[in-house]
Image 1: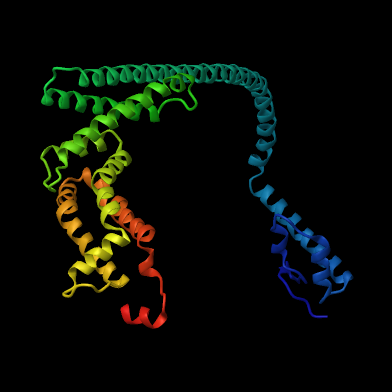
Image 2: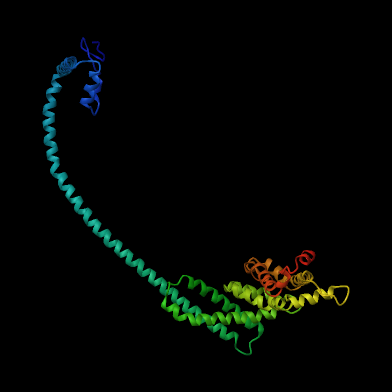
Length: 347
């Protein structure tokens, strides 16, 4: 049978000797692979020949530098002694390092516990300082509002004091946002806080009513009043005052079916004819346009010029919802189809 593989001396081997240099050799798989082209007897003979060649190469290497080979034995013996001499100090050093590591671990644990306690103490101190600040601001706001109500104070001085009260309330609102949740101290202040808000809104509402003249002219003080509402965080209250003072009087009077029908009949060129719902709706729309131009436009322009006042968004948050609600509630007849042919003719 023909052989393959490298030569061992003058002998051609049936396997590759380089495979023995691998880190892991599966003997069973190696033999099974070689048996595919060589019988066991040939494999055994080739393995013996390869071992013989390796032995001859080893003897040749020893003979080539015999003195160094002999010295290697004594060097190895001396190395064992040196390693044994170093072993004891290294074992001792390892023990000391492990002991030191244990000490450091305990010290780090105590340090972590100390830092955690200090952080907790700092948090409590910060909360206490914040609550003291809240109490101080409540007292200042109450005192300023009392000064606003004092008789004999000029209008300018009263407004300046009210602005200071709004500023204190703004700071108080900011502090309350960072106060501990469900704080008993803050809960005990709730009645006083409600009283401060009610007093602020009442005073600002009076100022806003004075600034909104019946003729539709915007008084210069209106900007300051609206700014005070926004700075105090009372935007919803400002919208409600605007709705009550400006929008509600118009919607309750003009956006009614009876009023709209009367306005539509007044626009007719002849007397005695009853206006249709469509004409009533047209009359209501005309009234809405006049209301927007005369009463709302000056205020909306004022708010549009000031970035702070644009937060009120009076048009979409107050005016249109109120008008839409009044039409739906008081002028529902205009949306009733009634007789289909008349409805389609009218609309």
